[in-house]
Amino acid sequence: MKNPFDNFYHVPNSKELLDIAFKRSMKSSAQVSKNAPILIKAKKKESKRIKVAIEELINRILKIIKMVPMIDELPDFYKELASILVNIDDLKLTLGKLNGILPVLNKIEREHLSRLKRIEAPNEGDQIRRAAFGRISSIINKQKNNLEYLNEIRGRLREIPSINYTMPCVVVAGYPNVGKSSIVKNISTNKKLEIKEYPFTTKKLYMGHLEIKRRFDSIKIQCLDTPGILDRPMIKRNYIELQAILALRLISDLILFIFDPTVSSGYSVESQIELYNEIKQNFSKDRQIEIIIIFNKIDLAKDSEIQYLKEKLNLKENEFYLTNALTGENLDKIINLLKERYQRDE
Ligand SMILES: Nc1nc2c(ncn2[C@@H]2O[C@H](COP(=O)(O)OP(=O)(O)OP(=O)(O)O)[C@@H](O)[C@H]2O)c(=O)[nH]1
Ligand SMILES: [Mg+2]
Image (cartoon, rainbow, N blue to C red; front, side, top):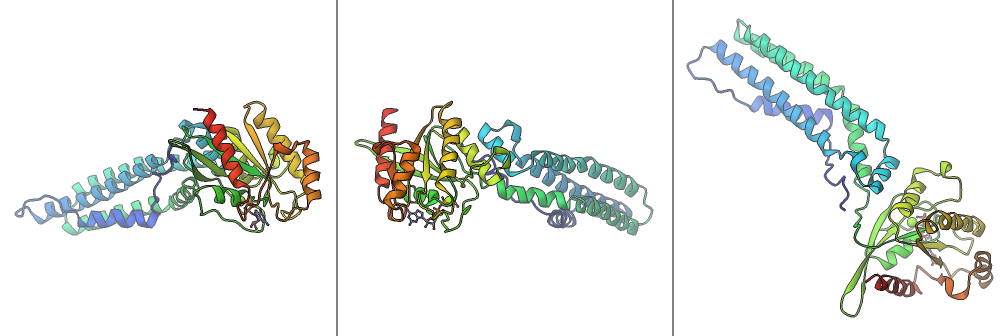
């Protein structure tokens, strides 16, 4: 499914909204016979201007409100991810406030049109229209923060990756700085992933794709890079870590759990093992999701470090993979394993 926020386009700010509406209004021309008295012409011209400005604003505001998907109705993954990224109550409140100005605009229109009907000199028409524009400007300007807020959350929501629910999804998870993005970058089409020597480089979910050739066809697999997760109670996890947890819980078909057996990530092996146990407990037991264990950075790892981690995890020789994400060493083994796994699903 495409990111449901893809059609959440730029939200104009209050100044842009007013400029568009007033410009259109002033360009509008009322249909009035050439021979009509000046007073009638003035009434018609200014009524038309007020109507056009208000109509334009109401349409634009309705368009903005409709652009925001009903979050409660989205599939769980999108719904929950959106709730991590934005405060849904604030969003609802903002949309409610924006919606609330529509009747006010209608009222301004009614009041000023009825005043226009009663004018006795043509220049009064111009004054009434200016007064209406003044009221409109103050109403729209009061929405400045709401409009900016919508535009700001739009930026965050549009970055949610598109998920294809019919394709397998491999989620790559682990402690920060262990080489998750380096691995996803190496095996998938997503070459835009940011890789840095410090933790929490990845702050959101990034989808990569890989296509594995078989004898007569190929298998397409999604490969999701996630932010690093620390071993700590769920309640203490920040919104960056929670996105990774959510992906593991709701969209993973298989998990690649990456360990850094060296000290180069800055985190202890013991903490990484605690996290692994938690993930195994929560996601692999109930949902029976297979976890593939990877020891990355083998170019830096001492034999003793690999042995230590292996023993701590109680693993046999064929129960983990040793990789170097920088050179791609042994990543072909991971690809082969995926090929084998998804071959079985035929
Ligand atoms: N020597 C060596 N360095 C590696 C290897 N894999 C990753 N790195 C380095 O480790 C650092 C972290 O790599 P990333 O791929 O950004 O790690 P990450 O797990 O995505 O980190 P976060 O996004 O912060 O959680 C970078 O400096 C990488 O170049 C490896 O196999 N060997
Ligand atoms: Mg990363």
